[in-house]
Image (cartoon, rainbow, N blue to C red; front, side, top):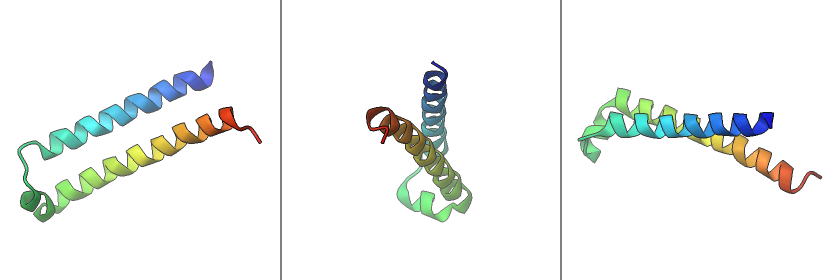
Length: 68
């Protein structure tokens, strides 16, 4: 049960990272995005967070499916 609550937390953090990306880029076109380094790196950081949490989720799922 403990791991399920951690999965829920991880999923919530993924949703929050996606919401931050959408908030940072609202009303922004490509040229504006790539020319604003602070926005670019803020989005990149949130994509990294999503990737890390996804790996943790997938890793736990793999262990459950194939514990060897």
